[in-house]
Image (tube, rainbow, N blue to C red; front, side, top):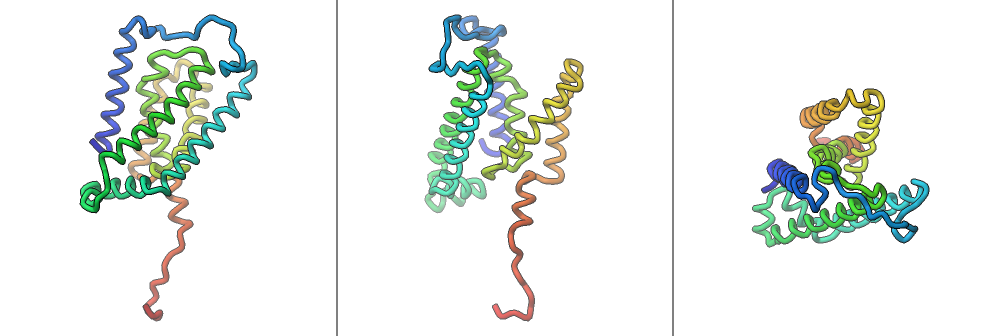
Length: 220
């Protein structure tokens, strides 16, 4: 699968896992799992203030961006861009499409698992909705699409816009606005698909590129 079909299949897998975990007692079922009731210390990443968590997540973000930048400028990055443009053409030129996509999927899962593990360490609790909820899957996709999928800082820009919007709507409406999040996500998807499919960051990158002089009076 590729493109939108791959995205839909990924969401379907997450929803299937949510149902399995919800109906499995030893995984916490619908109640969720809490950390062990034992004294915690700094080696358990347990801090009295939230500030150390901020710097810890910031360090993970920087490392993730550096890994992504390195991958983008490596042979794997060229393979991925060629596969995105035309997988059939990339295969005909010798690009190992299946292996490259598998490596990208593994790297994505590894980075996501680090963030998820730190999330569980910080809150000491996980449940099916926080790990496999449909809003989690949709939010990740919208962050990338809003900022610019395929751009280094695209998902970061999308997150910087989407997260405050969600927090503001929750703060203003509280429990009454539970369904507003879905409306907000749906509206963002429609606007992006209609006016800026490449994301907001691609708009600025296009403007910053120098235009070629195609005047007829110049020699080729």
